[in-house]
Structure formats: structure tokens, C-alpha cells
Amino acid sequence: MFPVKELAKIFPLIAARSRTVHIFHENEMPKESWFYQFIWDKVVYFDKRQDFLTEVYPDAEYIPFPCFPVRRGDKQESRKRLGLPPDKKIIFVFCQRGYQPYLRYLSEGLEDKAILLFVTYPNSEMLEVESPPSWMIVREEGALSEDRFDDYLFASDAVIFHKFQSRYYRVASSVIFKAIGAGCPIFLPQQSEFFRPFKDEAVYYSNSEELNKKLLALFKDDKKARRVAEAAEVFARMNSADRIADVYIELFTRILREGR
Image 1: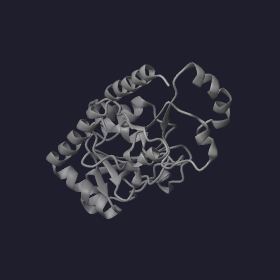
Image 2 (image 1 turned 180 degrees about the vertical axis):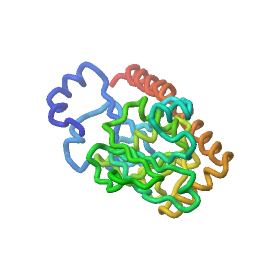
Image 3 (image 1 turned 30 degrees about the vertical axis):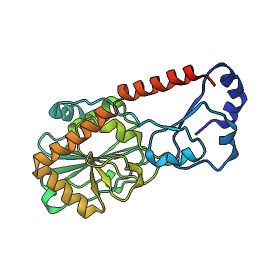
Image 4 (image 1 turned 120 degrees about the vertical axis):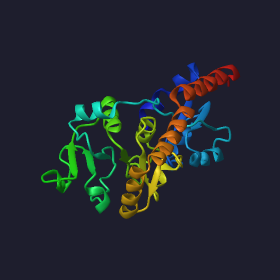
């Protein structure tokens, strides 16, 4: 959360010696008065739904949220490292950082060919931890490192991120921007406001029955899987960290030139 009291003590000193830029993360304007006591040289937002900022800061600028680099891994090598079956379709259900274990069954067409892989925190409340069915694996792990998160994505044929809102009123999910360049088709809940930036880059579902149908359709159609992965790759390249960094550097340079 924003360290208001601590920043207020030193903000005048910072502002006297340098230019100040606030990158706004929240999904609504703060109701507290503290937000308005800081005079920024520039305010930046990274989701177009945050354009309400322009009502208070007319010169606020939109700069997209950056993606992790496009990268690929060897599916079978990743499965070996993770101890996962080599011959099944693996559906990775990410259950950390507030994401939920939504899909708890597989339809008749999927049960014999797919594995539901849940990765959650230790001491989770999933009843299946003790005795999962043959088509389910539940892993309880601490927060995943970048390498291990990538290994799960490389090993999987699809990944589900089920979430409807942030615990901290954030408008976007940094986890998705990390996953989108890894080549694993992403499934997201249709009703969630949390994933608005994405369109063809992901597959959307409205209920568990539809999710099962769309997973089965994806596994039967390699062209469809490639189309989703290619759209995600284009998005990741268009919004790469390098490109977004150049935009910020241009912004900072312009602010320094303009002065106050």
C-alpha cells in the first residue's frame, strides 16, 4: 500500500531536488485527502479504464503495463523437472496470489486424456489435497520463483487464471503480464473486470461447463491453440518491457527539459 505518512515527511525535499512522477495503480480515485496533497510533475496510468484520472490531472498520460519477455521452454524437459506425466494434456490452475481453484472436475472427453494441476500455497483448504482423483494433481508450494513459474507454464497445455478482483484495489494482474509471453494458452473468466486489456490473446469462459468444452476444443484443434499463442506473443512483443522502458525514458527526459 502507498506509504502516505512516510512519504509526506520527505516529499518536499524530494520535490525540491528532482521531478516527481506518480504511476497510479488503483482502480478508482482515492477518497482520502492525502492523495491530493502531493503535487506531481506527472501522473501516469497503465490501464485505459483509469482515464478518470484526467478529471483531476488533465495531462495524465497512459503508458501500457509491461510484459515479461517472450520465451519458450522444452515441454518434456519441464515435465521431468517437475515430476509430471509425459503423455497427458496438462491444465495448470494457478492458485496463488488470490487466484482461485475454480475448475474441480473434467468432462467425459477430458478425464482420460488430461490432468488438472493445481498449484496453491501450503495449508490450502482444498479437500482434494489428501486424496485427489486420478486426473488431478495438487501441489502445495511457497510463492513460485520466476523459473519455477515458467517451468509450470512450459510443461502445460493450458493455464487457468480465475480471479475477479485484486485484494489491493489494483486494476490489472501482473501475473498475467508475466505469463502471456510463455506460449501457454491462457483461460480467463468472462465476467471478470480484472483482465480487460486482453481479447484474442486469451480464451474466455463463463462457467465450468463452457470451460470444459473450450479446453477440449483447444486440445483437438492445434491451429486454434497456435492462434491464441500467436496473439499472446504479438501482445507481449508490442508491450515488451524494453519498449515500455523507452516510453518512460522519453517521458522522464521530456519532464526534465520542460522543468516546472
